[in-house]
Length: 100
Image (cartoon, rainbow, N blue to C red; front, side, top):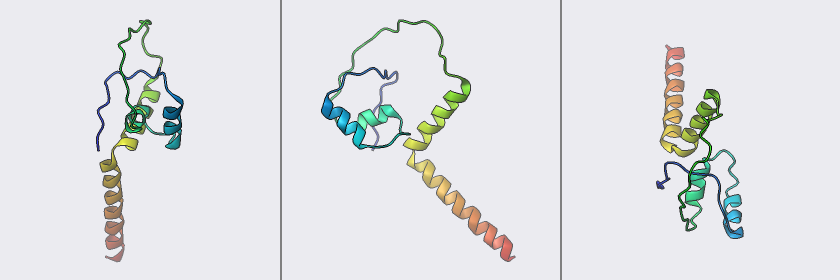
């Protein structure tokens, strides 16, 4: 199942108490928060806002790469299957080479 996530998600939100409880029920702390908002199942309404600050981002390259890795590893199950089968293939190959 894939949810449509807006391109420029802002983390400022007004939330009702039942929505916050539903978010806390997930108990996942490494999840990409925009997907968590989408899969919680509540109706959401987007409001256009203007960015007031014109300064560039304060995130370092290392932090942005870390966020990208967390995003990829928490939202792509195909990647997890790829690593699982790759690990099994390497294990079987090493057993065959050892037996040879």
